[in-house]
Length: 346
Image: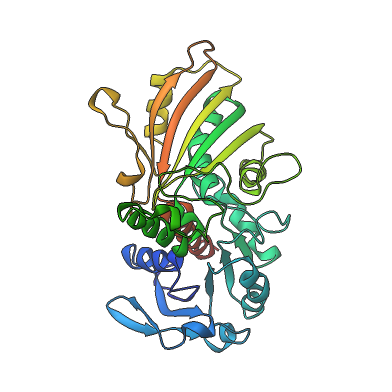
């Protein structure tokens, strides 16, 4: 990071699920902050957020606030429509925008970044002033794919996801809790579902977002398109995204087909050296990645690494990460860290 320089940092959606995680991570890593500006809609006026043992009042998000507060880094996590409306104002005020929504991800002029995979793309930020944060399920996957692709040459990816309710926001988490309470009160049949189109308690829903004409959901197509953009490689990929009754932590079962033969032990050793990956792979001791073990962690956990029974160019593995952290807040802050580092090198 540039020596001694500190930044005025705005967090848009500061009191949301991801916004709260961003604030926590900024504190944990002692990000070089001169002034923290928590922003949200007018509905949140009068509320505060805690940062570095201080209660900071939420400031209303307006087009003028970025200039008024002299914002230099703006971390957006308040929905695509909010980013569409206010990110340009932040850029106009001189800030770099790191956007956690889907709005700018596939814009050809906006870099889509996972720092462990394509940090060099951050240098393209000046084209629009915006850097996009990928989808939660994409981030943990490409972190795992990158070192394996470099070693063995990825030919195809097949992935099934098991995504936590927190990926749909606080109300979705509350819906799961309420339905479980109703179950134990013997009235689950009467329990409402608004966050999801089906009951989520004691159930799995093989639909995340709306279906497209090709039979895949928008969530599944995000994984396809974002992976290509991040890795700069057209890797055939098929995804099946499933919502599961878990509060936090996305899980993914990966089947990877390579151009070259791959040995599970060699792949395990390779992944153990990759940045921000942790191997949890001792099945005999019932040690493998699970969502309940990843909460509040900033790493992606990898296990169940095994060769295919029939084809020595195919590898199977299971990965888990905290979607609010690795899949959102942590990646956004890591982008900011890398941006600061690159600016300091100029």
